[in-house]
Length: 307
Image (tube, rainbow, N blue to C red; front, side, top):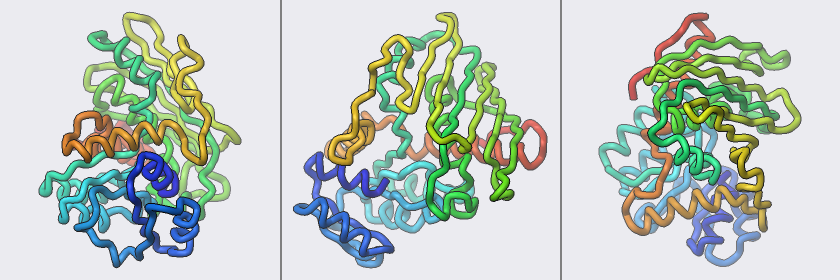
């Protein structure tokens, strides 16, 4: 994602400073992007020269960069998931609250055309149930299966589905979950099924797995209109199967271009209008993930913490 954000930022005309613990990787990307890109080691960042920073590390490494940016008054874009747990995220949230810096979080599905249209369709209507799944393939990084670094595969992938449920149906107040443990990595689940209850009283059933070889993603929302279906990785409305289907161009995925452009425009205006996923919002989604993890451990219905 760091590479994707750098490519998008350059496409949008921003000057880019790459900072990575593996400097050779940063230098390779800088060579590809050419003009307007420099490289600096993590300890050599000149915060006063920056307008905004994108934090694209694994979730377990979150904290120091966000805190430093907040202390220097630099706007932040934090990739999801924002931390491995709510407790881990709390110091970041505290630093941001103290500083008042503009912050966005990387839940890009809030910027999907199909999701935007679904929200318009459902506005003012009572949603009484949701049903969804996010079934895909594993992220091929050696740290991904380590809960201390990723927070769990569930945290990394299913939090997208949780965040989208909150965006279209409201806050979740409790969860109940069951799991299957992965054969080669018994400390993590490779299938999680969970029920959610919303503060409105609506209920939902959701499924996550990383056992597939391709992505199978869908969210159905039930209201007085009947069933509103968002289907596929791009969460397109069934009524418009061509929506959001644009292909990558020069290594840039269109939805990340849309999301990054909204953030950089907000930074330029010094106004958070147009940012659809804030750090506070991402924190509340992380609290739902925490509740699922507690339910898997306890075998009981678990309440969601208060953000």
